[in-house]
Image (cartoon, one colour):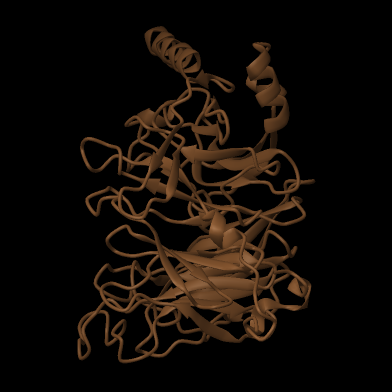
Length: 458
């Protein structure tokens, strides 16, 4: 039994934490519209103070299903996530007790899905440290529509009124750093660790060692899933390497893309598998010269990825011979149905495009470079436009562009306004009006992967 003094300290910490970071807490608007001093582009900063902000990773949606709110990670609410209204700038805390890993914004319902430690009620996110004993996580969702309404009206209820807890991920699976929501919103996918993955591989499987100077990439690991109706956890697929960046197709149920994570060049970066474990294959078969990274599902039938071209011809080091412009590089689009790939664009020099995305309507692609410049590409004409710059290479992270579901704008994270040149803010970059108004000569053929579903669109 714990001493009374210890119990009182825990109770006091819990009360203080609950009072300071509660679901539905509101923050004042910081919304500010800025004109890019180089390109003249309109930049809508939704946060403008140094609050430890960062975007959800580009493998996942950024906006709620109604298109009105974007959700981001921040220190404003003691390690909890916050939603900001794109038009008003109003901010609302949307998790309580913290979260671990990916935030999954549902695209059919107004819900946010995430993992949370089971001891969240007694330990605030800011109290967790590397090296703490492993703790299982729950899969949780929050009813955003009701939360936003009650927060605005000042009629907030306890967190349990908005939360649904679906089950707990066993420690043998872990899964806490990865989470993806199926398009039908009835299953989540996450990482499976060695303890669960190893018995599923054939006995003669060659287990991959670490690859590259960062000493990452060794297996086995895999992908697992939870049935949200029952809480049942089961494997999808085991592989002999380290799995990372698990994402689901927001338009096609049961389709999963993941990567072989090495922290850099991988022998075979991108993979696809079905939720029943069938169809495992490389998404884009690579050779030793290809440095593929930052893949993201961007439409029902498409994945955008960067084939890096940032190294000198002839280089051969711990990463191998990859990423020179001896071979084709740039923003690549892969068709999931035909397996065809084409290069949408590439900077003529320098690092090349690094983090990439594309609009779901098939019209645009977007990428950043090592200097935190943002490039927009017209996929019908292959024209490239420097959309915004000045986001400071000294920033503590890259700008990570991600298109909105309606293809009208791009979410980035930017240090443009911060005094220390490192802290990030959440920023929306609209596609320029003159590009949105473009029509095309029928003689300009769309890319092969534009698809029958897009015929008749401009």
